[in-house]
Image (cartoon, rainbow, N blue to C red):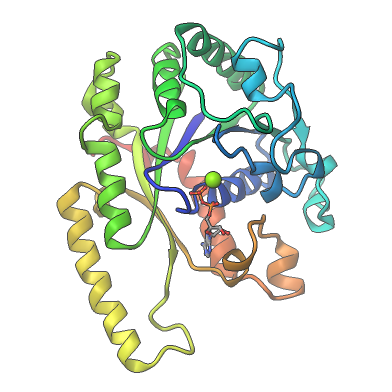
Length: 300
Ligand SMILES: Nc1ncnc2c1ncn2[C@@H]1O[C@H](COP(=O)(O)OP(=O)(O)O)[C@@H](O)[C@H]1O
Ligand SMILES: [Mg+2]
């Protein structure tokens, strides 16, 4: 299974959510690989808390591989290298969790047919080795997204799913929907590459992140009423733009820990020290299950 993580904007929660979903998937026993294709800012290492790759690696990362400078991209074994004891501490039957970081300071680059070929070759190998590969793509109509689409076209027979992350705000909903349905969006760019539009659409779902719960303590009754009303209006906007409930994979609640720190939410955070909400961890776990649940991906 191949999962591309996209968003129109930065700051949607794409990387933090995808990292946590990858983590939950590994805890469930899957061998998981996470490729950091956020070429302009490959900081997935900081979410996984691996010192050797907080901002990417110095040479040998995914940039180096795609640009043809190394034969294999660098790998970081998250469970072995993370600084966090509660991430290290996992059940004996957890799967592997491998991060392939980008390179420090290389940035975005337009992709050539040769780089698309290298990308497809890498993914072809990884989907044999791993149960699930996540590719976290730079935001917007980026070079990374173009490369992913072009490589995906060369991956006949590989089960591929696209996640489009957005915050639950008017601007984010409209932008995320346009990334899919709008000019030079995923569907149009995919069609230009030879994808069947409907088929591509059916492999794509939205994920809403950092949703405020109107019953959350500390809100005034006016705030709770307003949030509930505005939530209804956002639902209508999402529906009108093609990002309605039919196309929604799942939502992730706002979590106080993630507001302050990009990190994996562990059982220790929820149960032992009580800093993270159980509902947040449950949402990541549920997303990891839904990704592999064909029912959630039946043609809409
Ligand atoms: N469910 C959530 N609740 C609160 N904050 C969140 C949540 N998900 C992500 N965040 C925070 O939002 C910010 C942006 O998330 P990030 O994953 O880096 O976005 P992106 O990869 O889309 O740019 C980070 O500080 C992250 O910790
Ligand atoms: Mg990111």
